[in-house]
Image (cartoon, rainbow, N blue to C red; front, side, top):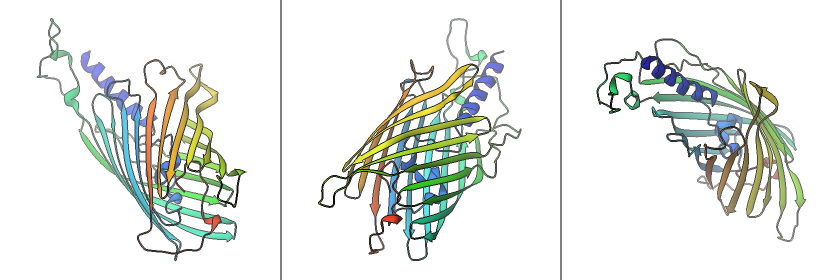
Length: 338
């Protein structure tokens, strides 16, 4: 009986990883991790960018979910080629399910006219996952007095480490006023099972876009104020998620407000409201820092502790390029990373 419970618990870990888009870096500040949102966003800036993202999800739950990633990309303006690299590590659950990810991105851009561009991108990736069964407690380790012994005779026919290759693709169109993109991850649908059976992860689809509105613009060096309404919809099989909201940028500050959930959809008669996301950020020269908090509005709100997220960005130009300013080449996205 206890073994069945342990196997069921292990299944829940794997299912929660699947349900949270296992191979997908699911950040609330999704535009602060552009290479994991859409490969076509690789090198969208004027020069190079280096970014760091950290997310602590449900901190009130022991052994919750933590994700760390770093990324870098560069725009080779001369031939419209762009390249990027992303590294990430995440830890989930009591059994310490660890995921290590490396991806190499390539993107290219073509001009439709002076005000409209189309970009295509691809991501080649490798993921390594490992799990610690030593943290699980079996029935034969418990004495009648409730004392936990160190040795168990139980055995599970599971591997403690797996690795696999995968592929992601994306497309993006933009001008100086709007952007719209779509991406597909898990294209190869790799086997992510720790057992001898085969459990292929499904493709994940993402559709995202937004618009740039100027509220106040002055040519005399006064503060410019912009509002960036945006949307990001993700779907993997029957599971889906929607982020919709806006960022307001008034140099050098950014504030944002987002809703996450599917307001008109119900699962087991429960409306799919997930969280309200509040964001603030600061820009200084070529450096950006932003913080967001997910306030849970689901049934987890009483014990999850919400989610915290920090993003850092640094722009650089190690090739010493000197390009004329071209407003149409700067994609005005919600988080000040472009």
